[in-house]
Length: 139
Image (cartoon, rainbow, N blue to C red; front, side, top):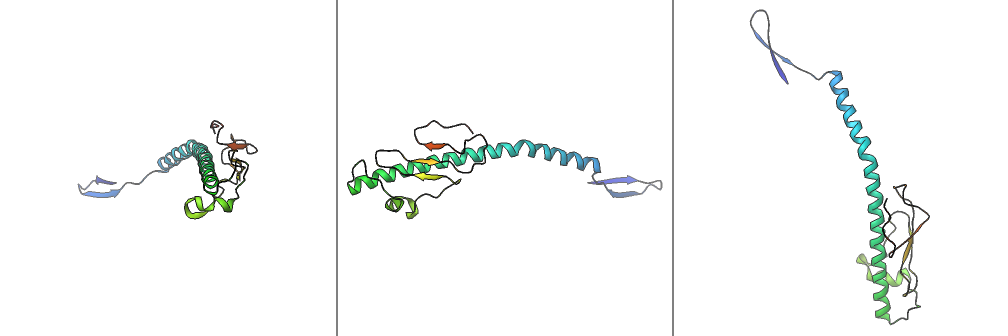
């Protein structure tokens, strides 16, 4: 910001006004408060997004499993492997772990599950098994 100052001789001089140390400290403090509020919310939403991604993978595994069973004319007790299901996924690969979880395919009559891995959200139990028919746990 430019400030014009008139000196004793009547001449106008330009002087560059700078921020004071106090003003800079206030801005840094406000930014710190905003970060203090935002970081826990970001962690919570990342944990929730990972959970939703795992549920989406479980739905894709179930659909691939049913399609494999219908195409290969297998009974309800047949258990497909990841290699059997690979062609039924986009990219031709079984879904990768998102947060260190392990997918359990099971037989055609069972729904797939996932054992929870590492989460960013401390409110989700890491020893819990995630299944499609369970209601969403609030992170």
